[in-house]
Length: 275
Ligand code: SF4
Image (cartoon, rainbow, N blue to C red; front, side, top):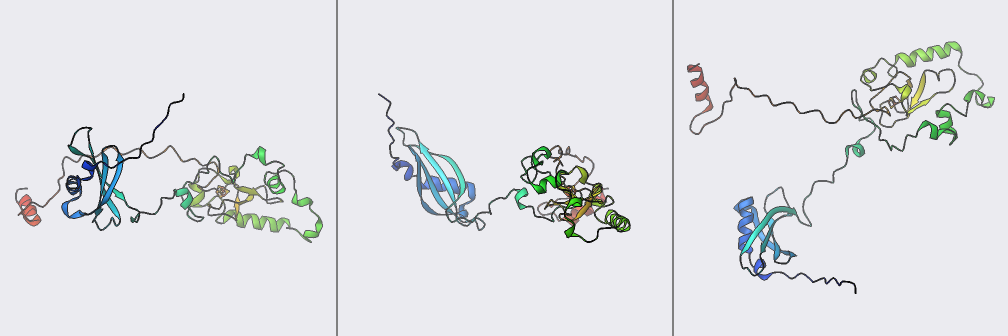
């Protein structure tokens, strides 16, 4: 026969429930006499284990309650305090739910010197092998498949001349999207190795591509292969938090503090007199 588990409804222990004064005194000791309001009720936590709830009168804690848990041993009438904590009630004023920084980040937040490593499971990136042949756009991005130079000639009547190409290359390269920018100088790596770079086809494709990272300042813009920024797909977050500085103990200087009955000015003049 399988064992039977009996679930017994918890009943409030009358002696613990009556220990309101003891619970209030414990809350007042923790919070201060004037910070504990009316008794809001009790909650049964277990056998001979009851929590008394008191209104919290601290202005910054609207709807919070002092929760004082009291208990007694079996066959004993002595009630003792187990713990006193401040807990939010159903209508408590609470801080907004915490949102991880990665979800708070918006395009345009990244500045010079900032690092924004892409997660290993970032759905915007796939290994190069996986992208080959999966669809037209990714083929083109990875350098395989579609060759714009071989598209039907109905799209363009004319194309860039060598002069037009060189002018454009110089303008783009020497502008804000080339290698000579503060953003690039503080970048962990160049766009050439970044998964967010969509390479251009045609004569400018050897040097330029388009940044496709929503968090990068250059998103949607032409960048040179030797440009870069902190949102590079392979950026790493460094080696964790900076180590804490050892404490500096100043054994020569001193601080001036107010003493009861002695003004700060008197202290200063006295120290000068004896200096
Ligand atoms: S600008 Fe930054 S995110 Fe964009 S392609 Fe270059 S390194 Fe990658």
